[in-house]
Length: 169
Image (cartoon, rainbow, N blue to C red; front, side):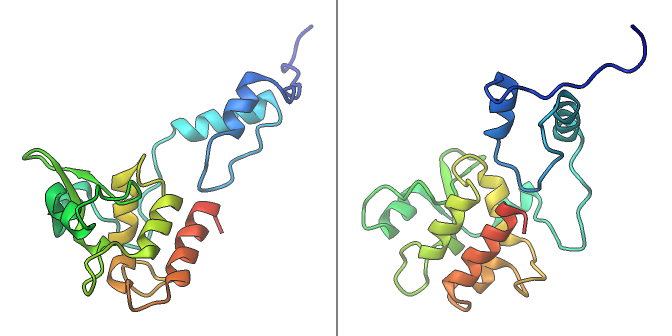
């Protein structure tokens, strides 16, 4: 037998298919219903990230320089309790953790509900730099950085923007 290899669909219970279907993706890749589709998906996942579009993206150094609270200050803003796990927690080069200050309401000092909801969607506990970059980068759809619009836009609009990003809409 010669020629191109035959492509067969992966069984529904195949470990590769199960692993690929459990991955949460921002954009819909080629469907991994065949071995070739899985190979295309693996190539997509191993390719370098696309170059930044017209919207500005905050660099990791800029994220670490943003106004932030120490772990003790964040605990105090949370009434002495540990800050909620949904908050973005960034490593401080000097030691400890830093919580970007935009996450806390100016009036009450407590975390914004929209921040907690969006950070759950953005998986801030797994990728705090990615979540912080979303909050601190310009959004043409929202008309500014999401962090600067906290308290100025309805919470549902900010949650909808994060949801659209995650769902790929």
